[in-house]
Length: 491
Figure 1 (cartoon, rainbow, N blue to C red):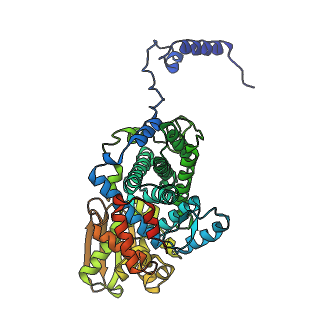
Figure 2: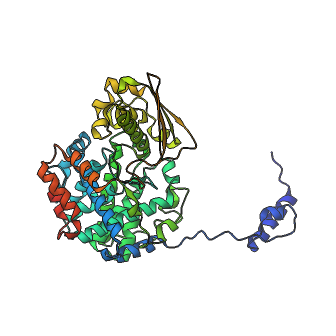
Figure 3: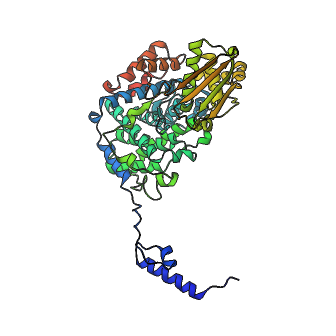
């Protein structure tokens, strides 16, 4: 049995009493019998009212306040999203989800892009969000790896068919939604992502709530509640990558955000500090909280202007390797039978996210650097067709991917790759990609975005209709009703 030293116990109690009565004193210093020394008080753990500051900005931000380049990028974001949503509209993932949900859908309020069905706005937002992400071909905010449009545009396009909104106000809401989710993502990235959250879903729900709330004309207090209700609905884990579940995440973020805004519009309340509170969103799901990323420079610097668009239908970390492979293939007219081996030096994140060596289905191929490089060298492309079940099981692709080796090099940044191809005739080909096509430094042009759209919509919409949809997206600011976008893109 342990013997309690009465004198020691009394001493400890006295020390604790003195320390409690004297703010700024160290218990350890007192216990060691040292001279009492004041210590610096701990900084206040109470952050500024982040949720309300953001809500105030969102409610008061006007279309007229948006810089021209931000409006332009918002329009490009819209065009790209409509293209990928139409392109994914008949994938088996959408077919299965529609089969499961259609019997329970409410009134036919909104369309599914690329399809004839109409569902209630909640289910339409979800299914269009799923369709837009299924190919992993959507937009990317490179600072956080958030795919911004999926949650935001899926929500507000469905809403626009039920709640009339002009094209200008629609574009303003789109930009504000993207701004919201990316700023909130900045505040917790990369720690939040590193532990396994799919940040497109967890931050995207805020973007959907903010954009839908803007269209609904929420008051500042209602917008606070909408953001709070969004905070209560984080969705998406990285374990889902490579399965249908991954595209569920932006789809659900869209419907959850819309759900939050609709509830708030009827004064359904929430805590006023759900983003920043001690037991709020940021502190609960991340070990990093940089609230300045959310509140500083609102209306002055725009994360939405930093959006990028994928030329390849897979995870963004593979893009440098794909760019390198296609460049070398085209430059030297390479064929699969000429190649002895392919060696890559990559950032650690590439192996972490896309290290699948033997994908069995198309979705898994999107998370395989080995498949991606092999199929790009053989087919000279990396669109959705190169990530089909056919492509990942092609004997030639399988044979070449076994000759692809990727090693981690700490000197390589996430946006870079060092590729060496050794040919059977002894030649050695080398290239280093500093910035891949589709990056901020080497952005896709408007013409390339149109070509991507056209390729995605081929076989789903007639050629003349494809052109009409493209022109409708480009002219969003002139539309009397944003619902015209959805009407133009259905069959």
